[in-house]
Length: 249
Ligand SMILES: [Ca+2]
Ligand SMILES: [Ca+2]
Image (tube, rainbow, N blue to C red; front, side, top):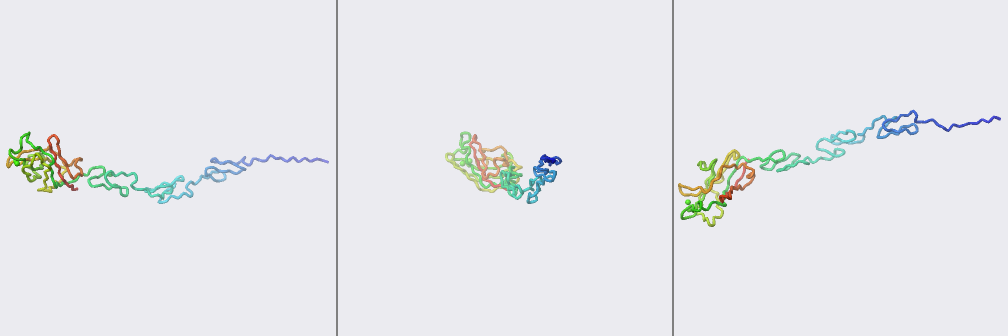
């Protein structure tokens, strides 16, 4: 009797021996298990990162991420951006992404002064004035007779733009505020291109005295910008005049 010994070979062939898996894929039992979204028998098919990604409002998907058109944001471009976000209108309000400037201001962020074209004087008040003429009375036997004058250019050129009435015999011990509204309003056109001077005068018939005159100055000055009460003052000379004004553009 012949014994036939069957030896069963338990060693099996390596199923992955001839299998190549690309892009990080791993072979398991002869089949590629792909990584990072790659597909195909050898993981050679590049994944479509934009599959299933919805970009609204005309947005484009690039690499799985939406690139949104202007005015939209969010993962799917479905969130409306505030058009005024990040826009600072210094002297105005942002409307639909654009600054609307308040009166007297201009520029893309309303930070540039827009000077008025015309200035209208409606009232003059003298708060303080020299009550003596270097220690002597302005009038020998009575109080000074005070009026206000506005000149074009240098004072004394007789080019008066405004002369008020005279307030007679002002009590220098208690002068209060001298208020003038006569001959007003006075409109000063193109005020930005002109120089002015002011004077406080003492009426002596034909030989009036100058109590105070200013140097030439412009009303087109940031200190005066948009104000309705313009102060002209000099404490060294006990001067304070207030012009009540309006502006035209
Ligand atoms: Ca007098
Ligand atoms: Ca007088």
